[in-house]
Each structure stands twice: as C-alpha cells, then as structure tokens.
Image (cartoon, rainbow, N blue to C red; front, side, top):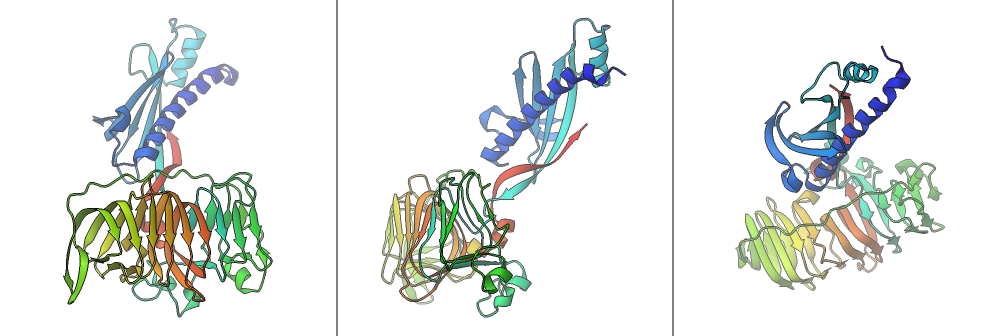
Length: 416
C-alpha cells in the first residue's frame, strides 16, 4: 500500500471533482426544485441510478458527471473522473489504480462516485421573517405558536386554541437577514420564541420586552433569555413567478348573497380589484396585476372547502375593512404571493387575518385595530416589517410540515 502522503494529491483531486459535481446538482435543486430540473442544460435519461437528470462538466483534464433523481426527496450522485498517467506501470499509476480499485469507465480515466441524500428545508420554518429590518413598535404585541395538524396543540378543526392557552407553544420566532445594528427592534413585545439576525446584526429590546421560552415569558421575566438570540440568519428567498391564468371572474350569488366575484376551481386574472366583495368556493388562483385595495365593508371571503392563492403584481396593496375572512380557519387555505413588482403591503382594520404572506420584495405594514387586539394566524416572509397596532402573531407550525420547500440540504454523503 503506498504511503498516505503519496496518495494525498490524488485523493484531494478526486474530492474536489466530486464536490464540484455535488455543488452544481444542489444549486440546480435550490433554484428549480424537482419540478423544473431540465433547466440550465440538464438532460433527462435512464442512468445506472434509474431515471435522472444529468449534467457533465470538465475541470481541466478531469471532469464530473452529476445526476439528480426526480424523487421526493431527490438523491444526488456525483461521479468524478481523473486521467491516468501515460505510464501505468509507474508508481503514480499504481497509486491511482489502487485509489480506483482498478475501475475505469473510459480510456485513461479512473472514476470515484458518491451518493448524496437530501431533505427539504421548509420555506416557513419560522413565524415572521424579513430580508430587512423588523420593527415591532406597536402596543401589546405578542407572538407564540400552535400546530393545526395536531390536536394536542390546536382546537378542533385545527383552529388556534383561543380559549385554551395550555395548547399554545413557544416557536413564534422572529428573524431577519439584516446584519445592521438594531436589525430587529423587539420594543416591548412578548416573543414566545427565538430572535435571529444576519451575521453582525443586533437586537434592540425595550424595558418591558421579553424573548424566550413559554416559561420564561410567562414567568414575569424581561429581556432575552440566554440562548434565544442568534446572528446566523442567512436565507435566500426566490422571487414569485406569475401563474398561468385563463379566466376573468364573474359575479354571482352564494347562500342568497350577491358577490362581485365568485371564484370556484380555476385560474383567474383581474387588472384591478378595488373595493369589491369576493367569495371563494373552490380551489382558486387569482392574479391581480395593477391595483389591489379593500376598504369599508369589502373584502375576500373563503368558504369552507375553498382555497385561494392570490398573486399580486400591483406595486402596492392595501387590505383594510373586512380584509380577508378565511372561514376555513386554516392558514394553508389563503396565500398572498407578491411578485417582484409588489413592493408595499399594508394590512390594517379590525379583522383577524388567517393565512400566509410571501412577498419577499414588499415592505409589510400592520396597523389599525384601535384599542382591540388583532390576531394574525399563519406566517409571513417580506422585505421589511413594521407593526403599529395591537397584534398577537400566532405561527402555525403545520406550515413547516405541509408548506413548500425552500431549499434541499445534504443529510448523508456515501462513497460507492
């Protein structure tokens, strides 16, 4: 067996080639998930690993071949190829032959392979997330969590346990990618969960503010519980892509009440949605391109059995008055999806909100309510957050289990 010091250069070269192939495959998964793996020149074929998407790339005289299986979760294979020296009888040739166990798949090349298992990282792994500053500057602001998918942590039907606080949990996390001083201003809020900033960022907290476990917050403490603040937040959020739409919605009656628009199963589009009453009875997608505003007694109602994905290209959106009434009680049944053009979202009024907000380029403002406390049930990801009212923010942990995947991470690396 050759000395370890002699093997080192070739072991290092193989490792570099294999890691490069794995990195390209994981990057492809990050940007395309498993629904668009043919992008960026990847080719679908039947490989030795079964049906997979394939990519080959040279790195000098060496090269790699990467494979991604379109499974849930996907498996990545990286094959590294290193040229054999011209004199196979030389000591170096014998070393390489030893490294590859005599296996060659092309003239003058030796191969090493790894199998990489992955798992998906939840897009909504935390309750309130922003790319920039978060300012919890209102009165009586609090966060906590529950789990609509488990009866131990929710009321019947998966509802937030309003009357049974013993069922609530303490994963009402608040996080920002910002690395600035006072990236996150807790103010005097009660945060049952953790706070995170980007590298180098800091958290400001008022004299009556508190961050920590349920026991810490309910125990009359102030300040941040040790271990409940980090500066390691660094998450990429992809832009929303406009859906394919085919219909203009029309009005109608539901349960004897007239609505300006009734949305059943299907994809719809409107240029303007301003002070109209909308009833959702089926699994609907609605794209509003130019203007979105609700005031007074107008808004969206999602009936039991209904679900709405609301895509917004309008630069600003204002939801006040009756806002969005999600009668299903489940945040997964209402999605606000802001496209890159959507840079402002204002949520106000006196109505509770149950749903999910994903608008990574929008400044998100929550206000109104007067002296009443308003419940926000679900999760949000926006550019910034500013709270001016009385809000209780209840993160539904089921979103991490049933919601979309943001990125795939490596769980195992095994040489074949």
